[in-house]
Length: 110
View 1 (spheres, rainbow, N blue to C red):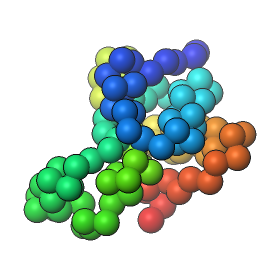
View 2 (cartoon, rainbow, N blue to C red):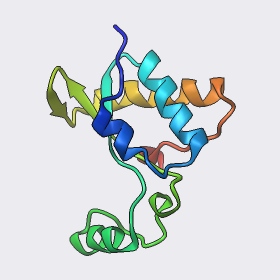
View 3 (cartoon, one colour):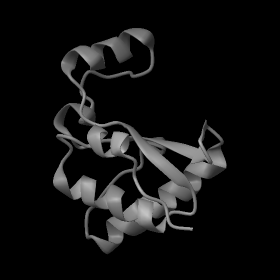
View 4 (cartoon, helix red, strand yellow):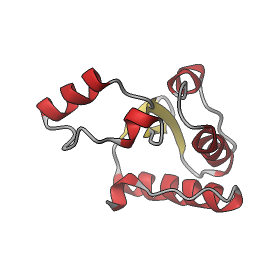
């Protein structure tokens, strides 16, 4: 099955580095698992909120420069945090990055 990014996901890519956008757009075409972009570029204020809540541990996030995106797996219209789904998404992102000669680092591999 071929998936496509929703308009919301495309909107969330605004300001993200073009090479990373290309990787995400290619990954959605080759993934086994549907996903969406839930966050791209963050403001300093948003990053501070995430640090304050414990959802992030740094004010030096690559989201601030458009070099990171957060992805959410979907099963049908339901969002899912099942880890095995993210392994499949990571595989698609890695394959797309290799194909497009764009080095990336999967966030779960920090």
